[in-house]
Image (tube, rainbow, N blue to C red; front, side, top):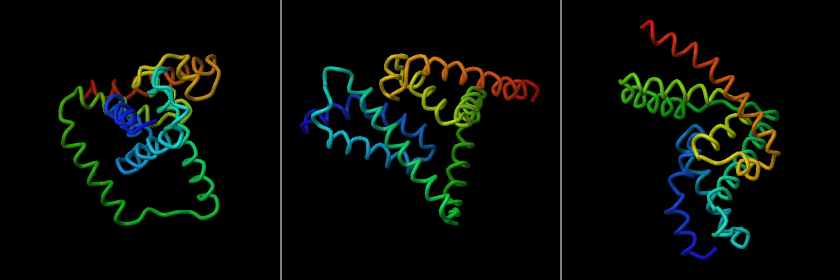
Length: 179
């Protein structure tokens, strides 16, 4: 991948890839790291990216693989030594939550928050599939290729995720009606 092709990819797909990383990682800092690592890996794998055959899907696949590897490493380290949240991290997290709650004063924004929360509560295998399908607009075949799983498994995960989200959101949205 030449520098010009990299710039083209970043301009064309950068916002979508970052947005996907943000939803996947859950925090701004982790999302930024994942985003940067995705494009660094793309530069490393320059010969494998075909600019004529949906590079966005390829970049999303790279992001998913990097994220899974990080989660695996984190789980391994957690088994060895329990980690604690640093005091500075807790304050930063609370500050981000306060800013988010201040911005969400409209009912539609509250519903969007409920949806995001419900999606975040899904198991990772379902969450990744839902984000790729609804947020990134990938087809079942493309998700199959990105995640390296059969199309039937993608369909099954989408069904399971929809079922879990419907159950979760039914309770949340019914509570909001009675307020």
